[in-house]
Image 1 (cartoon, rainbow, N blue to C red):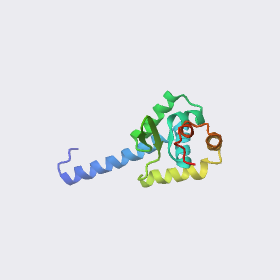
Image 2 (image 1 turned 180 degrees about the vertical axis):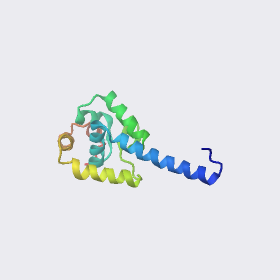
Image 3 (image 1 turned 90 degrees about the vertical axis):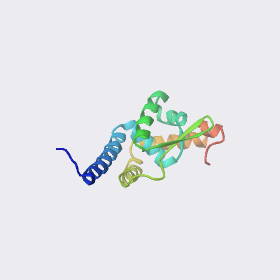
Image 4 (image 1 turned 45 degrees about the vertical axis):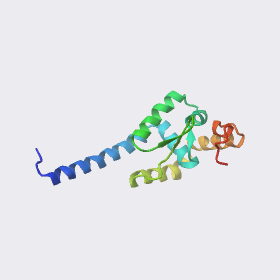
Length: 140
């Protein structure tokens, strides 16, 4: 069917954009490594990829692929600070994504491997063994 009314085209375009946003959120959350990344960021704030790799015990190349998917769906944002790229959960997010992040924080924190990720991050930060700490970028 061909739509000729511009109001219908506008509505259809907005609807398709909303559906794409929903699909992107679920795609971003459809992998255990991406859920671990989101849990770590949701609970500990901005983290560089080298520290994420150390905590999650995932190669940086593989981690970068997951971060690319999360960035393309606006689930994480990156901020460059000199040579560093810090990843975080965006301040302004859709209601659906906000709900998903709250669910991650409330339900996954006590589950393996998510709880272990948080514990490991905290232990590495406490010992000063994170790259961010070594460069005085840790938020103490």
